[in-house]
Length: 233
View 1 (cartoon, one colour):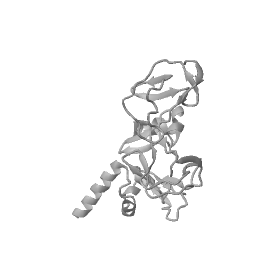
View 2 (cartoon, one colour):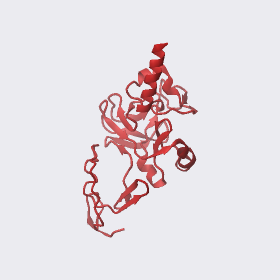
View 3 (cartoon, helix red, strand yellow):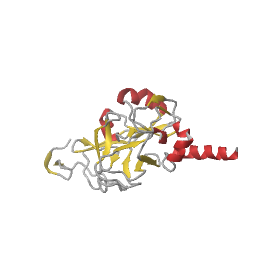
View 4 (tube, helix red, strand yellow):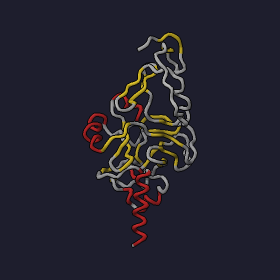
């Protein structure tokens, strides 16, 4: 690790140059534009992929949370994500980051150590942190609610399904992302709470209608196939 002497752009001391990483990609999310462009990298950990980048001794977060959000105590569960100012319909609120892992890896290696940290992105694929150091920077803190105000674009981008007022907790419905075998009690407290959540709730016709256009991409394809089969009958 290089010694630090004078203030740098991240509010931490400016490191001695140990090598510059030139990136072709440009982040286009608020607060991330040009974040790594021309920045001196203290350390680059590499296995089969880039695992983390340390700047001034801090691991950059894997996930993105809008500057209009804040993590604080939630009445639903533990900590939650809240709007600190108004958020417009379809505005990007968060983007989940992490490593692509299989269902087997998740159940055997990740969940026992880190708890529930994943988002499902395909039948047997999930995105999640894989180390304790990465956990906090990967968490979105969007709790489940049966009266959700966030939906999914693609597989990992969370957007507002309606105009959201400052102070509201930002939540999504697990039915938008999950295709699994679980069945658990729901305590979200919403007026329309289903009482029990299952990994097959995406199959419910009323939820397919309510969340049309906001399911994860792989579930959207499943819903479309289901509806095509139904129309044939």
